[in-house]
Image 1 (spheres, one colour):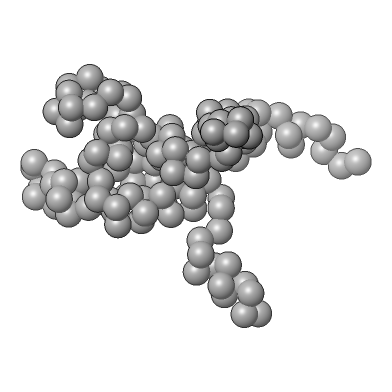
Image 2: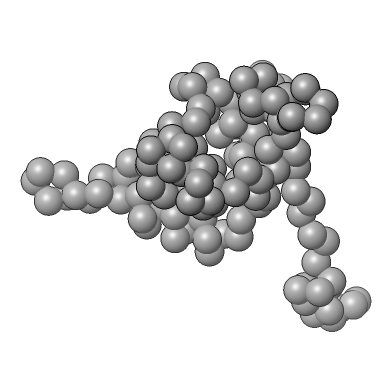
Length: 137
């Protein structure tokens, strides 16, 4: 076995770089006037599993149900480095509490959908377009 286990040590694993993304032209950089850049980071599989568990609700019959919208809001909030969605002043300006509620209040439905797609890409998930291309081949 060449190399042993050292390739798997945390300090030897290649880090996933954060990605900057302009979510909407509605948010502009005060200095440049250009669309403000949001910064997105990847999460670990363990953190993703925690977010999934937190997104399970009980139906009226008592059966567990996965709430995909809650999952996406929580995942996007967790992956957002900038702007700081936990900033009290930012939450207060939108009259919401919590990062998932803030991201839902800040973005339009189309912006949120595009942002979710970018967050999923940063976390290594394939986009719908990539899956369609793969299915064609």
